[in-house]
Length: 347
Image (cartoon, rainbow, N blue to C red; front, top):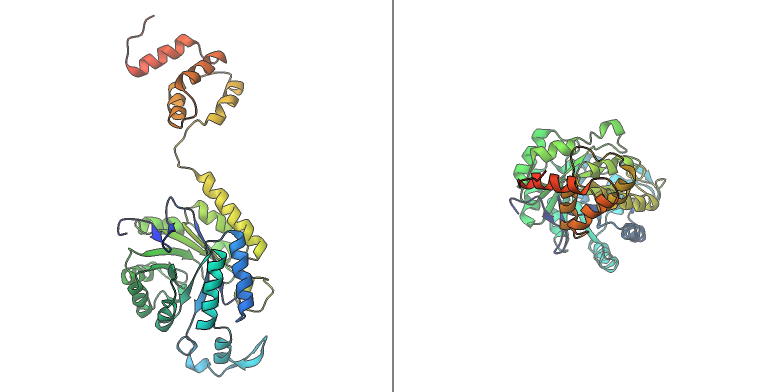
């Protein structure tokens, strides 16, 4: 993979230039510790046409600062300490076994962002297609080394990080198996702080690495703009209802919006094309009707070549159509074509 901008997501899917955008619905902890909520979110992502859903996996005792363990807070389940809350919203192996089975039934991938080395080992019990590094973990070299050792594709989010920090993380992970995601780590992020042109900056800085986008904004327009700028991977937080309890809910996309987002990403993909200007067969009819003056450059031969190559129409038919339409005199077409071929022209 060293000289390629394509990354495998499981045995049958690639992400990168020339491939369909890999679309991930980030469930995170928006399930609020309820397996039924997770199943409903998986349903919403599968029905919308997402490629994957993503969770977050933590070992609470490692990821929660000890001085915050016994701080009490109000939750939908009553008042509890912060460490108890972290356990309340964390899924264990039993829940992830059921999630794994459910995603297979629905034909959708799942993976997670591990926040500590123990969580990497936990996720390796499953045949996940990739791992994700949360922006907050970009500076955790121990975690990055553990992820690199899995040999799986690693998605690296770059929010709250400087160019030097990103460069160091890439050096720790190695560039062969990573996909970089531009992100702004504010929830929700302001449009004027999204700085989507960083996608192009990262493409130039890391020419052998596919670049994606992890969005935390409200609305869909800016995520679609990221695709137009070349994002090969897109991730948005998803929720059943933005009014639900939880810090990520307000910056998440509800099921109907997710369906529109996936639909519009696929439309943008189809519309971007290959960047080579051509005359389409569908334009020939309007050209005959609307172009009053053929111009000094007769492009019949070029139109012929493009259409014949596409298998749309025989070269002689293009010439005949132009002559029949009165756009060019037959002898002019012959003259121009002879000149282009370097043949002597009779006058």
